[in-house]
Structure formats: C-alpha cells, structure tokens
Image 1 (cartoon, rainbow, N blue to C red):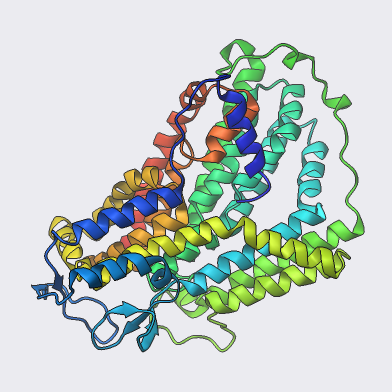
Image 2: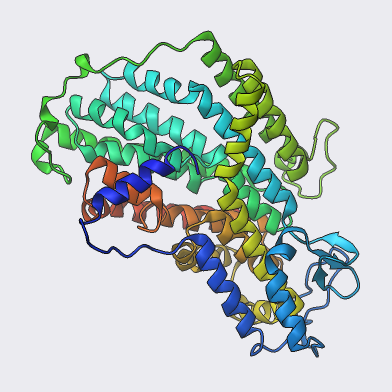
Length: 512
C-alpha cells in the first residue's frame, strides 16, 4: 500500500489495448469473499472433530476424535452473515470454544492487528507527506550516479531494509522515473533498473524481520511474539540480499560490456542519456534529516520492544526475560505508530488540520489490507464454529507425520506457493493459513517461528514474479520492459533463492 498505487493503476491502463477487454485478476477481498462462501458450503460436508487440548490450548497429537455438531442451518447462516464482524471482534467462549459477538471469554477477532495496520498506515503516509524519504533516496541515487555497481547496491540495500521492517513494496513504483534515467546514463538497460527496484524491495519483504504486514500478521495468527525467529530471518536477509544484489550487478556489468546481451533491449533515446546532466534532486533540509532520524529511531525501537532478548541471546525458548525486555505486542505497537505519526507531523510543522487529514488519509489508504485480515479471520471463525478446523488439521497431520523437522519446514514452504498465487495479499494469506500451519509445527516438534519464516518466504518468493501483484506488473509496465523478458531475467535467481530458502528453513527447524 502507498503512493505507488495510482502509478500502478495508470501503468496497467497504458498496457490495455484501446477498446479492448483485459482480464483483471480479482482483488484479495473478492477472493476471500469467495473462499468464505466455499468454506461455509464445505462445512456441511466435512465431519466435525476435535483434539484434546493442553493447558496452553494447543492440540495434543493423537487425540483427534469425531464430535457431534449441534449447529442448525440457521446457526450456520448466522455465522456466514456475521463472519466479518466476528473476524474483527468476535469473542471465544472458554468452555464451548464457540466464537460470537455476545459471548464472554478471550478476543478471537483481529481487532488488535486491524488497528495496528491502520496506525502504521497513518505513520507511513505522514512520513511520505514530508518528502523526506523520497528526497533521501533521490539524493543517494544522485550521489552514486558515477559509480554504477555502488548505485545498484546502495539503492537495493535501502529498499531491502525498508522491505524487511515495514513491507516497502508498492511505494517503489514512484522511483522508476528517477532510477531508469540514471541506469541508462551509466550504460545499463531498463532491466537493470527494473531488477534494482523490484528485487531490492522484494527480497526485503521475502526476508521480513518485523514487517507488520507479513511477519506481524502471521505471528499474531500463530499466537507467538513478533520477535520470535528474528535471528534466523535476519541471517536470511543478509545472505539473500547479498546474493540478489550480486545477481543484478553481474547482469548489469555484462550488459554494459556488451549491450547486445541485454534482455530488455533499448528504446529510441535510451543511449543518449548522460549521467553528468541528470537533474540533481534538492538538498536534504534540516527538517528532512530530522524526519529520517525519527523514522530510524521509531523502527529501531519497535524492533527492540518486540524481540525476546533472553531467548534470542541464550537460545533457550523458555529463558527468563531480562529486566529491560518490553515484550510489546500489537496494542502497544499501534499506539507507538500513532504517537510517532503525530510527532513527525509536529516536527514537519504540518499544522493541526493538515496533520489530522494526513493521518485519516493514511488510515484510509490501508483499510484494504486491514479488511483482508478481518475477512480471512472470519473464515477461521466459520471453521471453528462448525468444528471442522481440527478435522482439516488431522488430515494434514497424516501427511506430515513421520517426516523430519527439516523436511517439514521445506514442505510448509512448498505448500504455501500456490496459496500465495491465489491470495497475493500477505496479510490475508497469513491469517487464513496460520491457524492450520501453526499447530502442525507443534506436532512436528518445530518452532512456530520457523513456520512463520517458511510461510513468508513462500509469499515473498512468489511476489517477486507473479503477475497478480501490482509491484511486478506495474513495475515492468512503468519501465517499459516486457513481462516475458522480465521472467527470463529473473528465473535463475528464483531457482537460487528457492534452494537457499529451503536450506535456511531446514536448518532453522533443526536449530530450534
């Protein structure tokens, strides 16, 4: 989500033949609405069942048994009708396990994550409204304009860092107008610019450490801390980012040495650019510098607040927390980003009316992923109330039982690839899949954090190339690069990344 959405829409419109009809893949909201109806209908056919639960509420392996459901057809219709509402603030009865809006028990809905997404949307929008982030990246690109490899590495590293901490993806669509002329002026082609932008941010999202839209939502659905597994994800980020940057630079050097080896070719005028004549972005003002420092401090504090430091430093999942650990979760983080949004607006001298309007606009821009989370949670409510969740879990248990922990982690990665294609929204995919995948980890003796890492790697890997994402299809359109040519460029890297991911999650499963 972000300022690139309009550019993506515009790019797709430019590709559409005049007067012609073009198939548009349904939005995540539409897909989840269809999934809701399908799951509701299947609940009439799937037999209800249940596992015995331990003190922590986790299912006990080998205790699955069939149960009788007392739900009438009217009850099931009511669950379907109220599924989005229950997905937001449904409460689960401690004795019966039923979820409803008028019951007493623990919150089952995703109200905390919903508000968190709106809060971080408000914060990101306020930051972009200051112009500090755009100008900072522009200054970096211009400063490195005479050093091609360093320019590629610098831009990709910044995008990857933003991707891993806040899901920076659609926002990159606004940088094609800056990056393409610079790359052409340095003797590269449009594919280099495309790879720098798409793969730079994409590899960061793939290796999300605390990205709220991937790691955050998945961790919440898996009932673990946002900081669980951060060490493995950080190591993955370092290695996979280095591999991706090296891949793009290697292609760039090959094209500059022999333009005939370009996969994208050159358009008229592409070879006429001059790096020395590239327009220099305005200097960073003291205000921009202050905003960038504030943004860095906010995300650094977020990481500090969610990491279970005692477990991360000792390797013992049950280690006693240190006194300085905050153990924050989504309620505190939502408050943090709301306060940070206000603070940035005050520092930028927005004034009360502009700041209020920008915060409201930011929350409005992020209402789509927030609603996706709610709809996906509503699907799990239907499964829960019809008592088929454990039946589905039991059927998958039979497939993975007896596999090693390393193989189980790889299977989680592979199983989520087709799901990521059907549901390109990371938030919706996580909310839908984790209630099934997380208990499976308990059966396999694998940390739930490893399952989160395998899941988000699958989602991130698919989003590097599938045409159902605005980042990819909008990016190649803006760069005027054929999608088929982009696939030829990226497929060797995808193969390398898939092997590395499987290796990392397998090691992570054994290690933890």
